[in-house]
Length: 250
Image 1 (tube, rainbow, N blue to C red):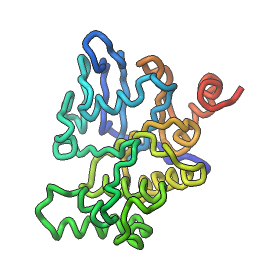
Image 2: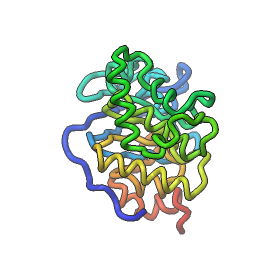
Image 3: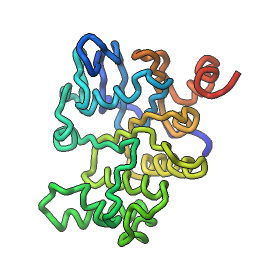
């Protein structure tokens, strides 16, 4: 995978403004974090283990309390939104790091679970057909139990399920986690294809810093709960300090 997507412009869809957040009172993980994601953009957050990458996601998704600062989505304040309201209110879905497919259900049934609260069955069928159009492999395996598929296919199913409700923003928590290098490259190719094909907006955390940045428009480096570097992904890939710390370069 070579080159980078064209840099998106316009008003940010997601804004994290001066956010301080943590799990316990007086023990903040994030301190004064600022970042933004524009519509139609892929943004990657990298950093060492324990730096606060996952806490950024949890603060956006309402899984950890924000004690100061704001989270805005499309200009609307969603600070400390209830997780169950993130999709309905803000159009945000999440693809978690750990496998989340319903292993005993078929591919088709897993996709239906992506719109479990939707009463319009015709709309559900239309959205499943839409996802099948994006992922022909899932269509081929529609009657297969999800737990019997490969790790890469399960990740595709998780992404497809996240698209069922036409989200404004998809949070992806380490999409390469647990995947072989070849499959990892395929998943990042899928993410870029969806961005180019349907304008998918993605904020991802990624431990594989190089491939995450190569797939992205922009990136943020978080260290000790603060943003240490940010900029266009290609610039971060060429930054000597970032290369030494995260890309295995000297």
